Image (cartoon, helix red, strand yellow):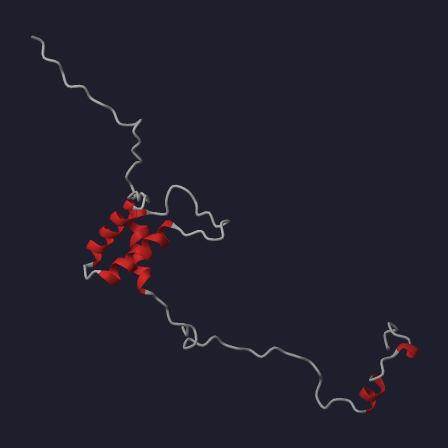
Length: 139
C-alpha cells in the first residue's frame, strides 16, 4: 500500500488487524540449519537374499547374453531368473555343494532347450567349423 501497488480500496481484510496488533517478532521464515549426522547416514541395512549370490555367479560366468532383455512382454522371464528358479528347485531336492549344483542347473536348462554361453567364449556355428582333411598318403 505504501509503494502504491495496492489502492486503499483493494487492501486485504486482515490488513487493519495486522496494523492494530503487529506481531511481537518479524514474520520472517529462516530455514533452520541442520548438520548431517554420521549415525543416521547408514540406517538402512543392506538386504541380501540367498538367490542374489546365485544371480551374481550367473552373471559372472555367463554374462547378460547377446541381446538386451525384452521387458515389453508382460510375462517375460529372463534367462537368469529361469536359472535361479531351477537352481532353487534343485537345491530343495538335492544336498549338493554349490559348485556342483550350479553345473547341474546349467545342464538342466540345456535339457529344456536354453543354451547358456560362458563369457569370453566365441559362438561356434556349424558354418564356422572348418573340416581339416587328413593328408593322403602317396603310394
